[in-house]
Length: 63
Image (cartoon, rainbow, N blue to C red; front, side):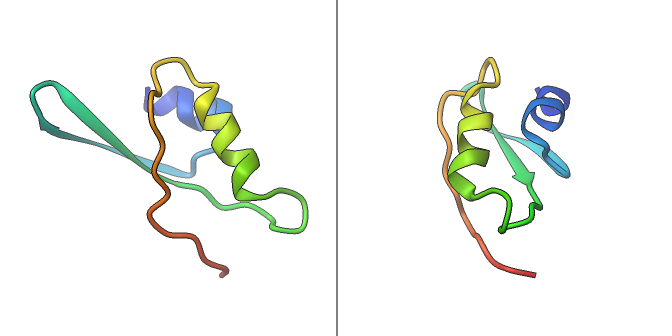
């Protein structure tokens, strides 16, 4: 799943955390040029990855 997220959505770093009852959370870091794309486009790419059911943005900031 992590490799698909990196290939299809451009994740820079991923971490899988099991939270119980077979439920897993993928924590992913994305970096992108805000002049060329936005977080909505990234979320659409994430939703397109097979197996991803829900997305929650925890933090968004400029570097």
